[in-house]
Length: 297
Image 1: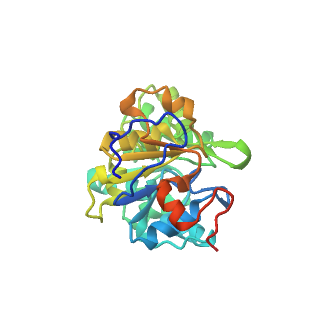
Image 2: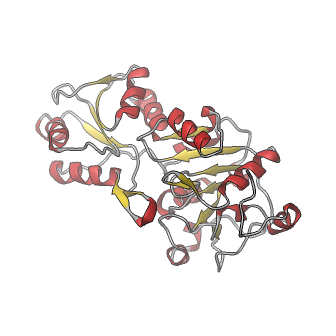
Image 3: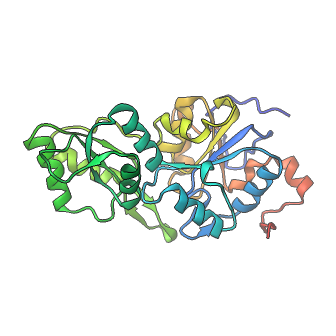
């Protein structure tokens, strides 16, 4: 049976399963596929089953503290070997944005090594001299300090030559046990507060450029693709902006109550208590699945 509910219309409960399989699936990783170093319930058998059916699977993350190779290594360690070409994150999209829009700019990246390495490989000039900097990149940086903020302040406010962009809008990165760590939004806020300027563009989800990064190699219409992620403000918002279906497992930041409080156009198509409910209930019966086990070895 085909699913007749329009895209991004929320179900009334967390058990309203899709009744069909779609042509491709894009998965957020942190809080959706895994949390810390543990796969979330049902994730392994879901990905394995989609691949068995030759349905394309792609992974997409707003986290710029790892590059696609590092994500591929982590997924392999967790039992989900994935080609690097099927993974994209804000390291990839930030470099693409700069090479497309400002290839000759000199940048200062408030960022960790994966983004800095990617910028260097792309031939983008980097500097810590405020008199040379054209663009400040705000990112999730666990070594963010006053020195870096001063460089950004001098380049933007004192020398009045630079503007700033950001890799992603996330407030925090989720950790196991309900904890978290301040993310890029904290760096954005610090720069905006002291310079009196605003971030020119935020490249990560919900920016539609992330959709191209995820499925640009596939001949798939956005409306036949599902974005799966735990955050209403990024994953689900990107789906709403691009005409994708969306599914929000209740394993990360956002809650069912928060989803139902949104206008219908902004809600996830599905809210799921576990991620493997993306497989229709009829297929669960055929496969002999239950909620008590993830039987894929």
